[in-house]
Length: 81
Image 1: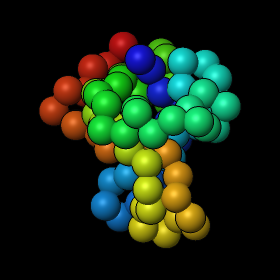
Image 2: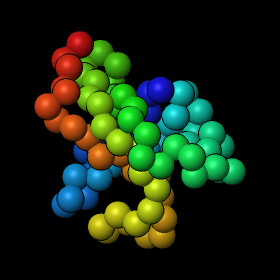
Image 3: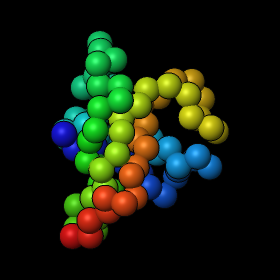
Image 4: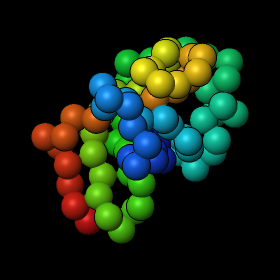
């Protein structure tokens, strides 16, 4: 499972808003379920740049309004393309 994330706008605690899940807007993809919370996914910002594994989470993130889907990267898995 792949998520598109804007790595230029993370929070102080390294959470990044998820924009797309498998090519679809995240809200449309998972609106009816919280089953993906805590799942391991691969994130990218630009497919030609890099990928990193991490965890998909739903909840509040510092500096963000309301509950959102966000990505917490495991930078040890960074893979440059």
